[in-house]
Amino acid sequence: LNLSREEKMAIAQALSENYTPINRVYRYNYFYDNCTTRARDIIADHLNGKVVYDDKGHIAPTWRQLVHQWNGSHLWMKFGCDLLLGVGADRKTDFTQQQFIPDTLRKDFDKAMVVEPSGRKHKLVTTTENILRPDASRVSTPKTIWDTVTPRVFFALLLVLTLIISAIDLKRKKATWLYDAILLTLDGLAGIILFAMIFSTHPTVRVKLQILLLNPLSLCFVYSITRSSMKARFSKYWNILMACTILFAIGGIFQDYAEGMYLLACSLFIRFAVNRTLYYNKQKGK
Image (cartoon, rainbow, N blue to C red):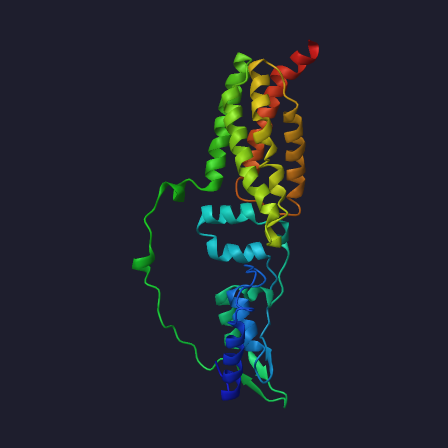
């Protein structure tokens, strides 16, 4: 960093002030107020001038797309992030908001200029060095089954299994209640995790439309659905779940969903259709 002695002293003093007991604890926020944005602000706010960035060719990706730049090759990690991130993560970012990523800030600092009160300009960064270069042979990890069974493949296999079981059910005119119980239990357990995130202090994970599909209510009604199916009756919760699934599909206009979620929606819809076909009209006739 191209800093004067006075600027270095000002930054050092600011760091000391930041470390006092009253200031050292803060509410970390991965997007808006993290270790990178704090470092940027404490430097930029104690310079004898204003930092001006080179924002030519600036694009405006969403928060989610910025995260994908770093976990896109790790599909299950990407799936987990997309599962927890909500509607707020699909808002477009401006130039400085993108600097929550350390490497983005490094690149921006490298091209930044400092405009002094007198109008004189100088580069913020004099030189850049790589102190420790990555060694590919030391960071490579062996392939596992989850590198082949990606989220999309997993939910596609689930859909195929659902189709097979459903075809058998229609042929024998009886729903496999155990399969529905397992499917809805797993659906409800995932929904509880999403429901818990509503109470998070981080705004980008509070409102998630995927909770309409991964619905915690499924766990509450799995017992009644199982009992109804065993007695050859249609449970009204299927109607509620399908209404939520339709809203989930519409919500895809406003939020990018985790990979494979639409395939899961198809599996649930097929089980709804099978149960309704087998039991609804029969129950209505009684």
